[in-house]
Length: 255
Image (tube, rainbow, N blue to C red; front, side, top):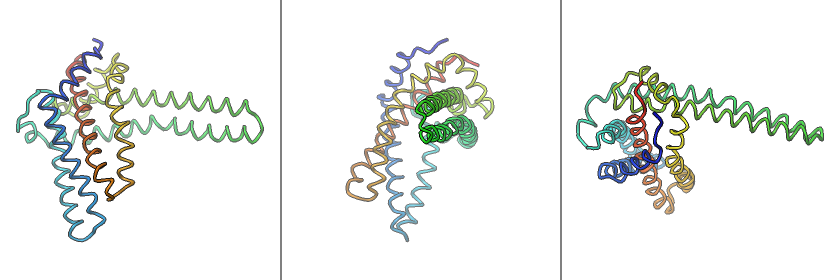
């Protein structure tokens, strides 16, 4: 059954603005503020830096619990302590395994684009050096086509495997079972899944440059404004992304 994109996005919006969604955004906001604050302590050294390391460790543990609990809370649309405290270790280890598989496949998918880029630059340079506009144009066009094809493979891999996350956390699937189910369930819906992820992509478009500027200013007064903004946009992006994955898990046909 094909995904209804408009209905799915409407449901994602409702989840994000619900009481549960707002509480999760607030939790991720606080967590990211702690990470930002801890990062600024490292330059100070001594006891301050040590305290920053302790804060980072605590924030890391809290982040794992919040990651798993958020999927469960958004799936059930209610907050319970058990969602964040029970059956944590195995889902977390399986999520690590999925991340490794993701990284391997996405890296392999990006290799053709990198090779295409290197070859295109090389051949285009040769064409320019030889005074041949035709060679430069043709190699440039070939590089663009190969790059687009590589990005298409990346998008295919991403949509094929992304549902493994809620499969593990919500459905309690095993590692390779979750990956297999994700591939099967995403069949014929990959394009609709990509379109449904546009709001997440737009939030990342906002987040990345703001985060880069914040990092560039370091501990300056400007960063005291940008830091919380980065944390807020990051928290919102996380909850919208998780909500979208939960909707995929609820709506995609069973494997």
